[in-house]
Length: 393
Image (cartoon, rainbow, N blue to C red):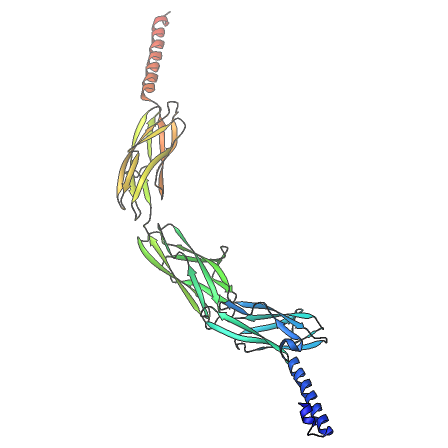
């Protein structure tokens, strides 16, 4: 082209055109040096598209590579990141905005991005920019819709048992807000019911501090009144702060209360017996609870060599408010001496029991009494006979 132009242009014109083309070529090389790999500066991170849930923190490792033959002082910034997202750029433990990279070397930068809890589901695109050199595009995929609330849950909210049972629920309290929250723990149980809260299975508390996006294990114990009727009861419990409240409904199914009373028809708990003799004691087993008593067994604790047998030996069932008659046959030891002895009789089921302590007095046998009388009479007659026979001599 210059050959063609040289035929029509003067030497000065040709020199001027050559000078302009050389300058344009130099400018093109300079422009290329400010973009991408050709400039000698490159940004690299292995994970450029990450899927997270609301409240998570992403830690990127970004390498700043200098492919040129001179030291590069690289300014770093984030471009296009949402305003509500918190982020930091660190190197060597310091927050940075620029970093110097030696020729043919690299420096590592830590980029931390904190996803807020209140965020919409979707794709978010932003970039790390090395000012005047290149950019590193990044994508964050928020996999579910974010919230700004408290979660109070339990896997088992329905428990069943007798009124004497301590009902224990294991719950999780999740602070899904951006701030540390102090939660007041309370319940709206019916009158007479007792509800207690324990944190991490330790001491009883009325409130608990929970850090952002953290979980506390809450143990809830519920005790019913002694004479509560059988039925289903709802126990609402709450975790409350100044800005949010989470409610949990606990269900308690009361099968009834189990209680019994063992006594005698007259209420008297004492009797007497002779050594080696037997004595029948009439007993009454009464169901004083609100649930049927089943498979009632009877047992005794007696002095050594004593024995007790029951008739009947077992009661199949007693309805609430009803009673059953039992006879206890007590047999004293033949070696028992006169005095008072304690014997305990017990009626029991798997749910409850009742016992009666009897005072049993042992008396001397009438036979030995009559033998004693005869011996005394014989002794008196012997003395009288001897006195009559030898008294006149």
